[in-house]
Length: 231
Image (tube, rainbow, N blue to C red; front, side):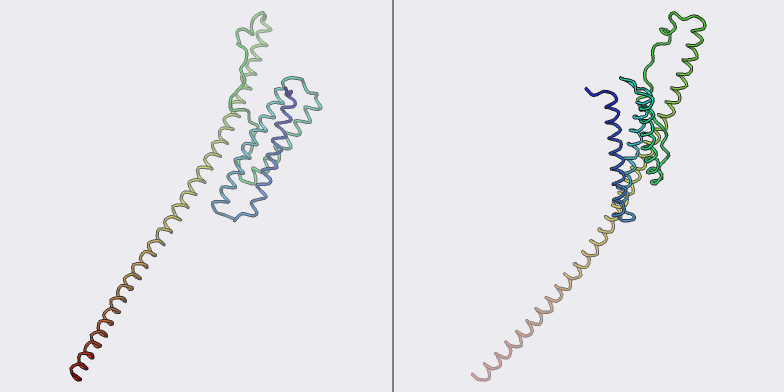
């Protein structure tokens, strides 16, 4: 079974891969039109990946602040914090390029971890210990409020990303409706032209039939005249 340190390295490597993927997607933008549905979809996909990457970096930061398993040395802890900070700097640059909100440190949406019951923590404490415990509880409550604030900010970022995606889908639907209207108008013009061509064809056939009938009558009259004259 992999240790928590190995898990952190694995998560970090996946975050690095996401950074490379996003950079590749940003490079692909040069081959797309300056505007249009395809360009908008591509930009929206990049924004979603940046949001997911920011959440993943928050998870890495959270694991460092609450280490489990074998404790890390101070040097290793600082090295990993620098690694996360470097990635977060890249994420902030990407977000700035796409006019996204600043990425603050965020914890998981699951909320703060559960803590021991307050009453059970007072067992065996004297007055001085109770005062210290009260201060500790107040400090923990302040930390919980900070985490709640971070969760609200995280939820806001996700809501903005979803709203942006909905706006994009709405614009795409409007564009599709416009294309359908244009195609319908062209189809009606083609049908009108076909109707005019069909009417002209029928009129031409009628004139041709009348002409052939007149010619036939003239030939018949000539034949009758010759018969009467020579018989």
